[in-house]
Image 1: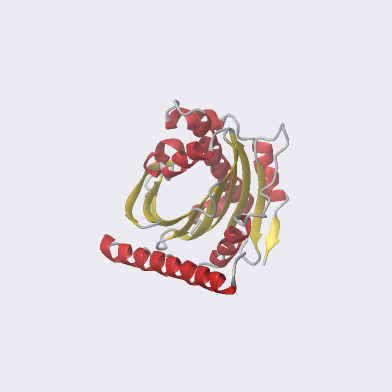
Image 2: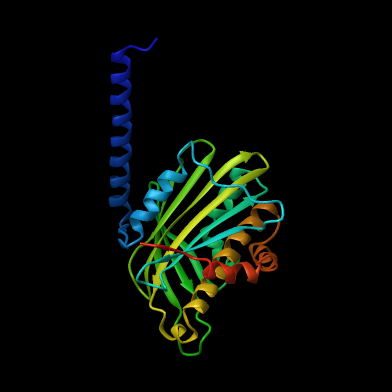
Length: 266
């Protein structure tokens, strides 16, 4: 039977571990020579809250129907019709470690995801990653979009991995916050949940209208996540092959209905 003093000692031990982790992370930041600060946006706190709620032991990520390739939900920010918000849920028929390996292969994202020229991990400090992204703009004389994202890696429980990410500094991409949470169901099935919120200087894209901006954004996000699924389920495939096979699974009808059935957030 545990005594009151046992519980007090346990509390002090947990506090000691948390302080030690915090001090180690700060020391690693200083040693790396890089700035791991991020842009605070209208959706930063939303992402932090959702990540905490969804990674809690009692949370339910959801279950897909047998004929569902994915589940989508579009989330619009009130007062900013082109602030993109998307929730995605996938079933990946692979182990947690296999999915984690694909997610952590950021240096291969430019082959795995559509529309990127270069992606790489620029630096690492403790549980933080500084990543570089160059997105191709398929318009003559318009430069590619370059930006950096800071990842924070967490393991809420042995059967879960959490990857939070936030924009490092604003460029054409003005704000970006999100997270991926993967949870092991068994050694052959992993649930994959992702929330993305981002805003940009859309420039000439506004001519096509906000629904077109949403459709293109949602299609790119689900294509990327399906590529993660394809690569994890088929580890011998190249990233390029996984991307091409994922493209065949993107349902344009589901993508367009996402914006039409969007939910407005305050």
